[in-house]
Image 1 (cartoon, rainbow, N blue to C red):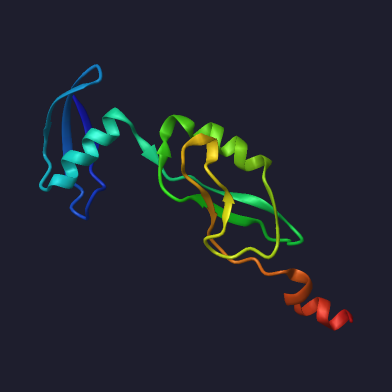
Image 2: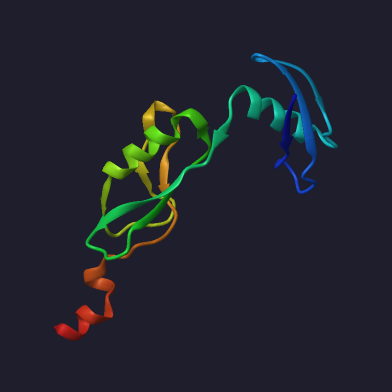
Length: 129
């Protein structure tokens, strides 16, 4: 018996999942259908969003990124290793695709903040001119 706290809705139901290997025998404790689906997904193929930072050339600030949707939990380490290799050039806008189809998952890595071109946006640079 595995116990999970459902994150499918604000109720936070305590789920009891009777598992036999890769087979789910029963799911108890869910108030809504989302709880049943969450338990099935979490037991059979857990997925997670990945967030990280990428070096932004031309900026002192790293670029925050995330996967557009959750990837298989087993791929998180490989995903982070791929992200560590990436470099981007400013400017970058929220939602820009930084790496398409990361690890062949069909899921893009996207920017979660704007990073302007520092040469044109940095007040200190304007004062130097």
